[in-house]
Image 1: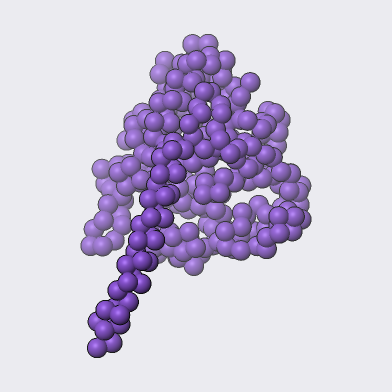
Image 2: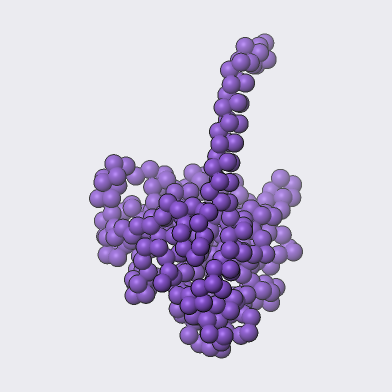
Length: 306
């Protein structure tokens, strides 16, 4: 049976100290600050200015971060107690990570990005990864980079750099999503923001109180999820998620109900056709711009130097 792992990632009140970025439909999950096992700075991934502004200069563009999950390449690393929890619950190839985190609406004032006072901050889904391969990297993962003939660089996954605990593990995404009847999507990607991907039912009161589908709710025969055995957390339409913990694992039994729920969530993701269309569009625009620049290079030289 395919499992769903509700995987908490990005900034929180203790790590990073602020929510991640939301602007209308756009979401950016901020990778947590880290000085170990990483070569990636916030500038490297295009977040230098926005991180500096939203953190009120507490974080700088040159600060390094733990860029994980990497939903540009379909990679996710785990280690320690969280990885042991995944192993103990037999998380395997084909299982589906749904990544969620703490977000808050932003706006621009005097050319600076700031958090909106109208949004107290809330939890929501921002991405997914279906497991296509599990690589047990171990304490010294340098063998992996040698095997794929790649030296560490700024976009190397942090779990492939430096020294780790023995159970250091890398999850690679499947090429195509094939769980729960979702066949039109790549094996990893990012959601747009909408009410479908929002989890907090009343964030002004308590952002940890989630909207809860029946297939998950044990009060109505749902499968529940790990770390949430206390039935007091489950009410008719909600579940109060625990304060700490990274990987909450569910094994759906009411498959059709789960499928329908996932289809609603994936309305806010680009299909394979849409992804390829936008890739080609971007390529065409770039090629057209280069062509135009080449055709008008003499005019550019005259305008610039005369």
